[in-house]
Image (cartoon, rainbow, N blue to C red; front, side, top):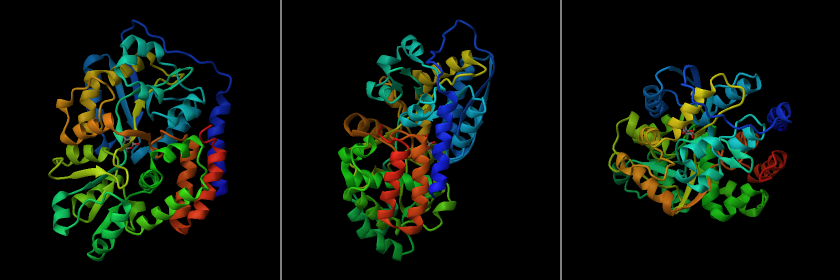
Length: 425
Ligand code: GAL
């Protein structure tokens, strides 16, 4: 394992080393008419595609002389896309714009490696400094500039279920993990999976929600800031609780996509699925289900009043072929029309303060309300609180834990990768 962790970190360092010495550069706004081939890159393919396709339609209508190439590499949370992106950027062949999470995935990886252009002139030109919440802009910025344009705000700590099934099984939505652990054995005895999970990144996401529940938001934030040691007994308790919960998940998780884990709930094979609210997009847009009746939701156990956020964004890498079209794309991403076309289909809410909520379904309306009133913390799995190096190494620790189920071993390994990847520094 040590060797793998070493290799991952070396790759990230190599990105930084290859580019060290380059200067901060700003995008240049021109009056040129955007035209020609233009490539965007993301992991929004297949079931995850409709929202992006609708945004592309808005773009195509505005910029008919551009030939947009919608390059996607499938795989939830970008597990495959991010590796391809790294190879392309290191190879000097960046797409004209690419999907990247606000926070450390952007800042601690691509901005640190000096691969992005500063978008401050575009933000000023479009009036975005007033339109996007300051707290969100903070996650897209350093003191050197603003590095991407947010297209959405997703929530990752959501428990999904089918109300009619819970009624049939005579159970309520657990508001704590203790309650979950009480109802889980009887469900399992009936052949119902208490909590469905899929491939490793979804297990990481479950872990971060358990961590938030066990630690509470202050200590959760302290962990990412480097102010709470991974070997603290509170963190050992996180892994211990997590291990207990895992006993009530499906055994075939590693071979499932996130959609298949959500399907298990829809089909009545599982009681709950913990998933980001792209699951609402999937259930409403792709499966045609109605929020509130066909599917229900609540904050994951022990996290009521806290909103684990992540935001997808697009930026302008250095060395691209079509900067004029990239600026046009970023304008579309940040526009009211683009945002309120994309987000109702995606299950996310618009990052714009002037978003028209009448266009959104009941789930998204409730998410928008929570986003305004809840305590906001960042997601690990979706790039907010730690850089790519830490995230990759964390997945390795998770694989190890899934085999050993040893909390002490896990916290020691986490402490090592936190130091190695300069977590919180
Ligand atoms: C997240 C991304 C979401 C959604 C999800 C599942 O990382 O931010 O927009 O695509 O992965 O693939």
